[in-house]
Image 1: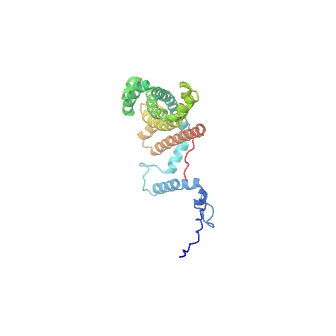
Image 2 (image 1 turned 30 degrees about the horizontal axis):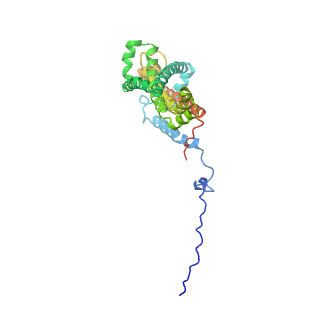
Image 3 (image 1 turned 90 degrees about the vertical axis):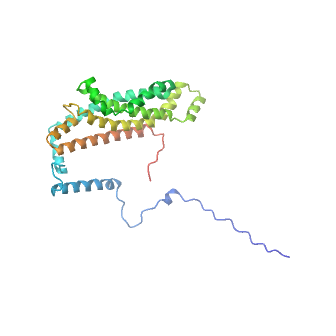
Length: 286
């Protein structure tokens, strides 16, 4: 009996996987140039400004509730022309800079003591965690009693808010360093301080940058509260004066200045991150 043998089947056609670029949907031909990203990002703010101005012009939004964008722009021009706004910005920036420096030194020093030593953690971490749960804005009355009503309580309030953020993030960054990196450093003959300098501190740097960004945001928030303590200069002083006379245009100008300074500080920290963390690959979006 003969057995028919089926011809051997040909091996399956295995084609190489497509490149990532080929999976990305391309813009269909004939649709024209793509809209720049900066233009897309400005569409909604511009539309909101137009709607705001139209509502004010139509009387839907009264001036004593919220001034129109045109009125706010004229108020800003007047404050810049007579030097009131630049002087107030200089005073507020000086307070933030001093508070950020003092709070940064205290927060980073405590984080190093607590993060690099178990004994330091036992002595430092628990008191800091307890103080962190206390609303720092609620300490304003005590600061006034202890430090008076001058510059000291304003700077102390900013420094307190900054110190907690830096402590938490630097401490977490130190304790989050990969143990295998420490073992690799030990195998290369690094001593304790060599490990701290070349392994632990660089590994904790991303956490420190994150803490710095949070600290800057908290510094501006603390400045708003601090400048309500019998201030005679600064952006908060302008806002308090404008509140007394129902000048919503000046109040909005001060709020815009706060927002602008906060964005500028955040941009500076982002630039610092790009310079110091070039070795760390990050996801930039799709």
